[in-house]
Image (cartoon, one colour):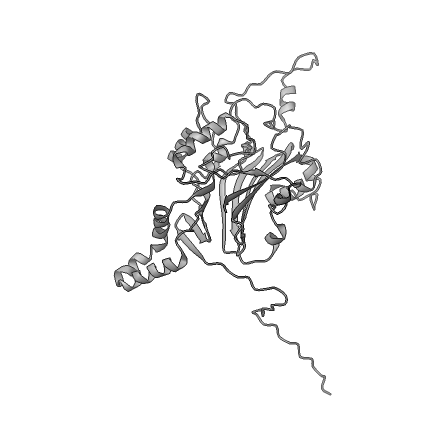
Length: 402
């Protein structure tokens, strides 16, 4: 007796596109460039370049320390892993940069030149980057780099608002040296080279035209003056006098100048992605401190996330995020939105939110730390009780050019 069989339809390895489920996304004209240590995209009025290099060697570290030194403070001890040559640069130009059509025509002319042109074509991407930098000067620049990030680290004795942190065993160590009598005062410790050993920075990027745009704190300081001297020689010509405008929810025209989260969570194609580490340090085995900048360019927008993450074991967690957003489809001109947020919480408050009590691995994941900190109600107000001025949220926007 034969048993009837049921035929199961075989699924195609390549899914079919259903316009009813997801509308087609129009891809803007863009050009991708690449050299051994940098990648770039030309799209619309923008040229975005991500430079990623190995950890700085000894001569590079010496130069970086020299640039960080101001007056008689002796500079700043560099983090264990310092990527001094890494950077992410956004450049804007009214007429845009070298277009894809012009580039294709130039490449075709090279191909027609013969066999010699083929050899030259092997390095055409690198030469394109150099030619673009020489031929077309940006009118507005915004960038992230290691030097300016470290300029935001406090040098000298910490003051109220700096968010100073002691390691978890500091108090126990001091008590062990006071003797058994409770009448003996606690000894006063003085750092031999005072600086913020956690490398906490509220660096949110900077514009060479406006060096004060280097940190969340806009009050004059030695840091901002040092930044001014460093960036003065790199200011582009013909820069429009654009300024950051604080976001006001009650202002009718400001309501639309918010980062559209729905757009960022759509599964749109990614035209360009880069991850640029600036520095990392394990804090003498007492935790971790790191600053990483990420960018993705989609058909409709540009989005940057710069994230500083601090973990001091047994003491606290701290995060400072900078988000940069600009639409590629804005009919009112190029508008850039900047959002900075600082969180902080005691170590145990985050540890108690672990999915598995015995697995501490998530405590080394910046994404998990940021998620938990954003859910804790006190993380943007009182934090861990350090009085750090970086706590809270700040939104700004700028119209580069109409």
